[in-house]
Image (cartoon, rainbow, N blue to C red; front, side):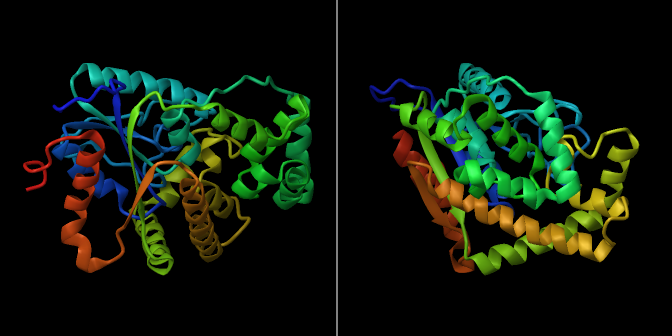
Length: 329
């Protein structure tokens, strides 16, 4: 990676976009072209044994590209954005020391943005009795009642969180109780404190026409079910992973767990999973559209497929001032 400028911050390449938009396949091509190592920017792929529902690449599918922050903790562990930020920064430094390009690929907006712009996370403490009270409220009155409570004190966080994301809804309520400030306001202040990224960034976002994206989401869910998602969730539950664990509240896991508990039938569970995944993709796009410095690439036009990879390469070469003539030929 020659032609350095006076900007001596470490380079960081980032590829984001909604679920099922095609990040994974493209990331392997890009990583090969730019001597990169991939860091997963997905909040669920950190968990061991949760493979199908997280669309995790298996080692033999990684095309020899090193991948990081995958399978690093057990499903019982409540992995957090601050942990991700710390581990990701360490990996970025390690990759640079090897003379390679760190490349974050993923769809968890807060996780990715926290690294790109050095968000400062504060430890607000915990209020276990309050958490228990909120879990009881969700159990007795439903997740929507809990979400409505959040909306009344922190509409910004409520707009970003699905009512079924009980753990994060409760945490946002807990932060408000402990600090008197909405979590969304605290996060906005953190963004406002950022003067300059610690990295020399190239941020690329993939998008496509919504109808096509939703078709691909439905197809992906069908593929996961055919690959054994129900058996994966059953195995996790049988191993003692509680349904209330952060990991088990992820898309695909909570819906199938409800089916296995007899709370829905199979067809209802699949319908809910597809619907919730579409809603999640919409929230992902909303988040990424507020990220500064993103270069958006529409990947829906099938006639452009052959031009997509060179277009991505040209963006990267331009941002990092690299000679692009030989990279994507």
